[in-house]
Length: 78
Image 1 (tube, rainbow, N blue to C red):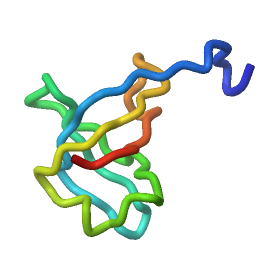
Image 2 (image 1 turned 60 degrees about the vertical axis):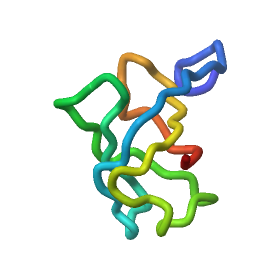
Image 3 (image 1 turned 180 degrees about the horizontal axis):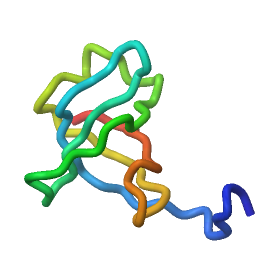
């Protein structure tokens, strides 16, 4: 088991970019279905160019712990 997880699974979620920090390569996201709340500091895959991470862009997010959306990573841009 790594990081306290033994199933090796993650959940894919859709989100919208609210903001992007090019220095840290992290994003502030609004997950689909959540109009009021955002999650800040979500890591973005280094395979995604910072220029792609503009506000309003839809992204695919791998969520490793559904109870803690901060434990996630942006893995694709639409």
